[in-house]
Length: 234
Image 1: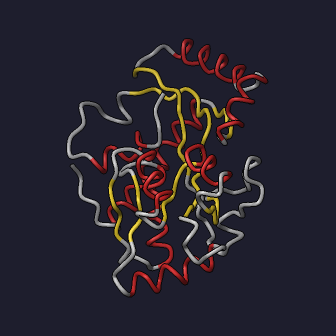
Image 2: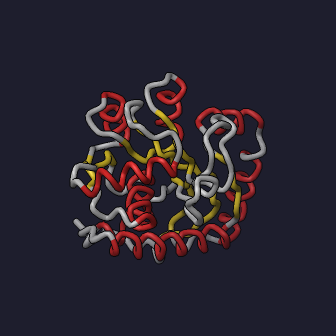
Image 3: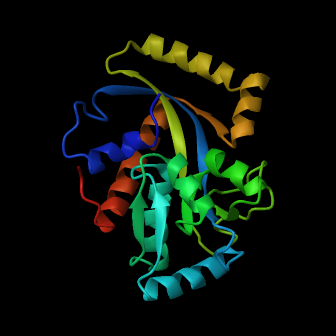
């Protein structure tokens, strides 16, 4: 199983011990987990539009940064957000994991972050974070009160952490099809669907052709965004 970082690794790393496209055979695009714009409760913004105004004021003073785990879905959303709103002066504070980044937002050390929904939701429900928008085409069942970025005035802004089931390249097609069939059945299982829903993850179940196309599209998309952001490969 590979994550969205599978598509960004070629841009974020000078060398890899594998070729992202040549060495893997995509089987099933299993699911995706949307990202949320979340802030510390003290941030004086309750909508995406209000947040953008507040962020522009902070960025103009050179005093605004956000917490992130570089390479994560939240990091991708954060950098895309800066480009989409012209807030390129905002800097990111790198953390070794989205959990520690979220902990510092909750503690008030950093004002905001973009986070996958599974990490942020418990804090939002406890009132320790405010969720201003979800970067998805539709609202999340677990947080129905949180509007989408499009509803907040930011169009074409869907960013999620996705999961694709893969096999080694040159795996026989019959095996690929058999595993894909099993994955499709699993995504129809009520127990599996309940576990996905509990974390805010949304099932997809796209087959090998669609999964391969998705990876290629994500590689191209995030390569453009990361290079425009000036992110240097390790």
